[in-house]
Length: 116
Image (cartoon, rainbow, N blue to C red; front, side):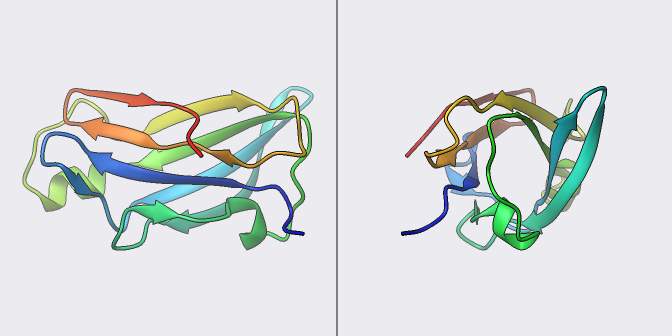
């Protein structure tokens, strides 16, 4: 049985394309501060698989933060954007499940949801 994990993918909704080569950092909240866990990049299909596996971490019922560093992507496409990075904070209550958190991105807005 696979360990529960946190994964994501990014889709540029203004172009309808996956977003490759974006750095994503994962943090976990400990008492009063965020602690860095791992960093990975989206693949050519816009996906970033298990962020916990990169650091050999186990999912626990805690608060996590994903930091999407999107400035480099917008710069590479010669697109002005309001967001140099996007922080998505989640609270895991059931650590026995997988958490897939897609980011729908455009230069002046974004949304996220729990996918499958």
